[in-house]
Amino acid sequence: MAKINDNFIKIPATYLFSEIAKRVENYKAANPQADIIRMGIGDVTRPLPKAAVEALKAAADKQLTSATFRGYGPEQGYDFLRETIVKNDYEPLGIKLDTDEVFVSDGAKSDTGNIGDILSRDNIIAVTDPVYPVYVDTNVMAGRGGNLAADGKWSNIQYLPCLPENGFEPQLPKGKIDVVYLCYPNNPTGTTLTTAQLKKWVDYALENDVLILFDAAYKAFITESDVPHSIYEIDGAKECAIEFCSFSKTAGFTGTRCGYTVVPKELKATAENGEKIALNRLWNRRQTTKFNGTAYVIQRAAEAVYSPEGKRQVQESIDYYMNNARIIKNGLETAGYKVFGAVNAPYIWLKTPAGMKSWEFFDYLLTEKNIVGTPGVGFGPSGEGFLRLTAFGSTENTLRAVERLKK
Ligand code: MLT
Image 1 (tube, rainbow, N blue to C red):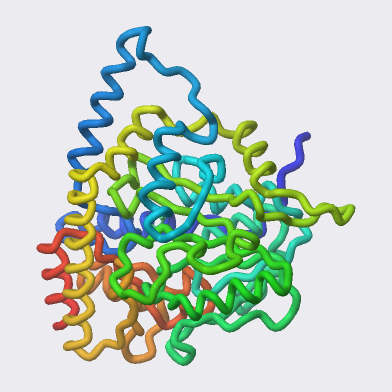
Image 2: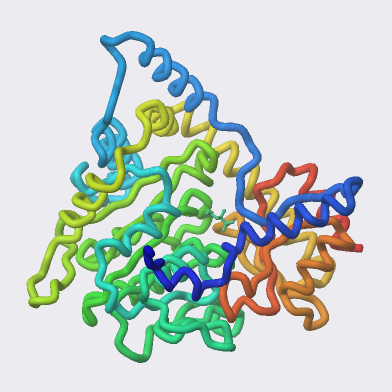
């Protein structure tokens, strides 16, 4: 009989957001009249930018004639999109990239999960805590987790607590690590690192031969000037970091699926025989084998996000969500809650009142206020006693939710 990957029975049976969806569904089934406001998973509610939809439709029409029809595309993405990304997302920051350092994909979730394919099972992984659960779960699946202890930590993973006490700035690891995941602006806390704070990590990674996996999915929401939009704004980062980006939150592509990952050619890691190998080559090999590229029509839609109208429409949605974030932050602060984030990210991280546990507060909000949040402990042990709300709803629902929370 076939044997399973036993790591799958070590991890909790359900992914965080699937567990929440199940609980909400059950509640809804028992309480069909409940007027539920969803502020749990960070899913957008505004429609796609018109420019993207028009480009998608035009690309779909091209599939009707053999002269313009596209079959398999390049696994790494079409040059038209890779070039557009380099020109718009990196050149204005003074960052030079070749197009073959950019790999278009179906999103940052897949890429941050899949990147482990090119890394040894023996690597010691560090994560900020709380953290986007994909980083931990995928490492556990690959056998890098060890065992889950009673404190909610995996024995082989280093947790770097991010709490109000340290200003949500992860401290550099004490022991030896090989790989660290950093997500800034941060999911779930909504906080971020300044350029100087991120530089400490780049310097540390260069000195200690550590690979940084930098998730920049929320960079479009940055409002403050000393917050980097790319880790490559920092000298030396190309030698120690992979950067993951997404159109999901920026341009409403959560259902449309498109993202990209930058693997600089100077970035190397060590083979078992001690040889230094370029990760760009390995990721290219992985993608060409396991991925057939993002659909042509979707890549055309993503390209249109960078047109002048596309940029304007994207900015409108970002402003809309960040206005929601302000409404939540101000409303909750007025009501006496301790609130973090919401300035450079569409997430609000709040301390649960009266010492409630995260899941207890989640249940209370669901049943008493008909509001869905995400329990902080679902993101890691340091998230206990916190809850995350998203600003991705309609402003009308955001205002209604704040009124309910104030009562
Ligand atoms: C979240 O709510 O943390 C995100 O929407 C999940 C994701 O992007 O996969």
